[in-house]
Amino acid sequence: MIHPDITDYNNTQSKSDQEICIQLSLIIDAELQDAENKIWHRHPVWFLDGNPIVGYSKLKDSVRLLFWSGQSFGEEGLKIEGTFKAAEKRYTSKQEISEDDLKRWLEKSRQIQWDYKNIVKRKGELIRLK
Image (cartoon, rainbow, N blue to C red; front, side, top):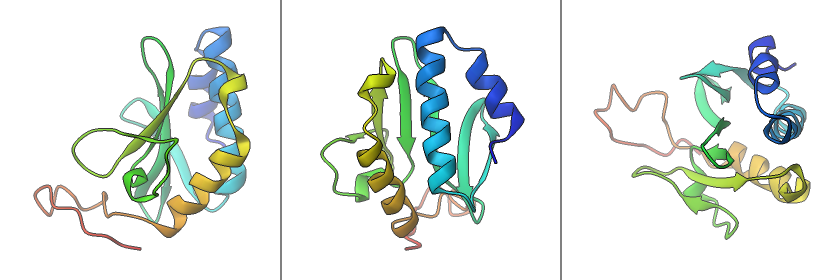
């Protein structure tokens, strides 16, 4: 079930971005039914065992879908984001969302996880969980 705060986040976006956010949240929530979801650092994020897996955020010109361990997925459709293991996909319209790609990436997000939950305790060192 999608947390009400995520629904509120989606509803505060412009019409086009709202459509993207709603579509992403519905697919993510259906595929990660056992995941906790909430607003984290002002953005919708899904967690497995307290570890952030996937989330999205409104950028100036798009909505960014972020997989914390996405660089390890071996997927051409995801671009490197940041200095750790994250990868992203940016959307400017709902029509750009490939449900097949998203479901495949979500399955990989279950199978391939780096331990972001304990990154501060480990002073920035990431350890692979799965």
